[in-house]
Image (cartoon, rainbow, N blue to C red):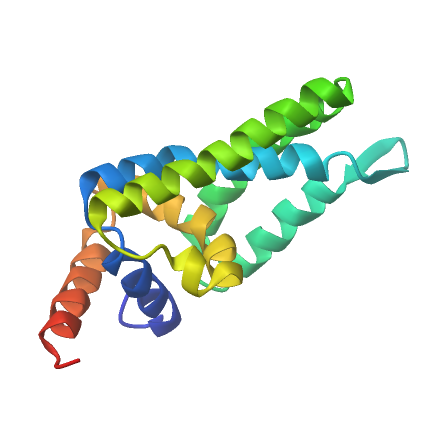
Length: 175
């Protein structure tokens, strides 16, 4: 599969190259969902009632991310959708709380998650992708969280072996 989807392999290689240290990976596994949760709470404040259902910007964001991730890998996208839907559900519920309360939680999660990312990259001694490519980093980060969980569980080893091989080859190339 990794050989057939070079877009996926390119993205994973670029991301993984800056995320090799176990501490950095750990804080990303915590920080990225926190960032996403904080953003989803804020996006839940904007919505419309459609046919008895409340559709918020948080729901639309989840759907847009899922559709983009489907272009990369179906299994990773479906796992993202499952956990993203749970996160969105809780965020939308919190978004109905008084604004002072939900905004405080949203801000703490969002900014705390980003602070964790910078601490992780300081330990790794690598520049966060966010600094170089902020849009790409924010689009890709939730996807990579799912990917990293697969890696930790020992699933799809052939993909991760191909990624590590490409990283090793890139590091051998002259700068």
